[in-house]
Image (tube, rainbow, N blue to C red; front, side, top):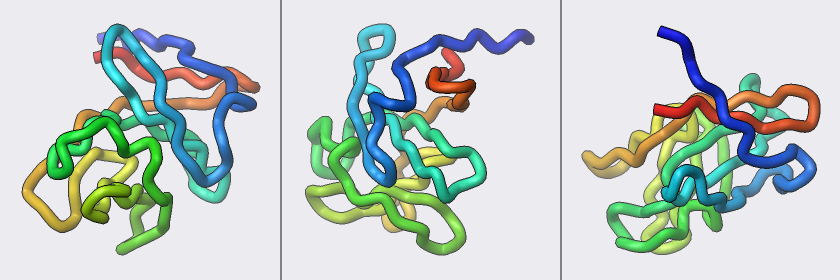
Length: 110
């Protein structure tokens, strides 16, 4: 199966160590640029299933339990950027493979 990649923004549109929300195929996606990480860019759903709002792009990025995570700005649950899994609750947000090629940020479409 061939992965279909979609350019969603430029790296210069992102903020180092923080998130930015983007609309991709009608869905809010939280994009994170983490230059200290191996992958550099991550994409997860922006919807916080605990706080019931599109806010994950506004959360704080941290390295916790050997994972890059974002802490929800509402109730502070940590979501793993590479998988969307919540560390404190049995919930998960969607995630997409993401890559940086030059200045272009791509995500793999599901």
